Image (cartoon, rainbow, N blue to C red; front, top):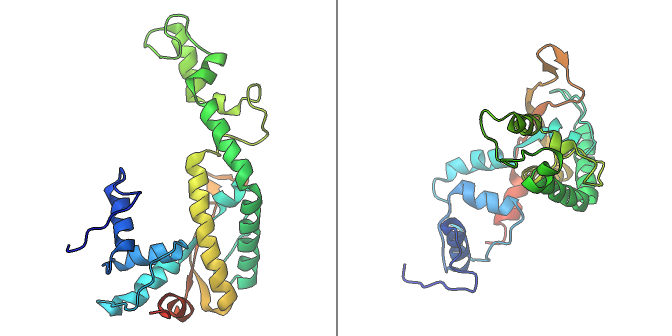
Length: 248
């Protein structure tokens, strides 16, 4: 409270991000374990300080293990055209490492393409695009109840046919699944993949599959892809502890 922290990027619109920047520039700062560890694991540059004090340190192991746990989700692999193998609790860790490496490499190669696709999706769902296909003479694309022409616009929007258009966007990708929200999720997912890669390269026998959510059946019908979600977690966390706290 005795310090006044200023900077070219302060204040910004969101108090949360202001607090993060102030914390980085202050002579000392207090974090929750979850907040501090999430910044470390995201690869964010943290300020260099001489002393680290861990209060309630008996909770640190569990917090770290939870932060280092990774959920592998077949949905994200399907977006990149990489089907996730059917893992089980007895699966060889090498097979997981191969999948994670393949996923990370593919996303790195396709990220710029997917950014373009996300821009395509913005255009496809815009009023300017929708009215190229369906619009009401009286109401445009502003749907009014009781209007027959508006009913056609409503049906076109409801079925999301506008996202399948190839007439006004020259792109072969399926824009129903590629947008800025999915792209951000993929970036966050890939960050976790990089952390998992580091852990597996440090000690692959340290990891176990702790949970599998099977999603291969949908109302009795086989899904075309493996959309399972598995949780992989480390037994020991010394490799990360040494890296995170060795400089204090």
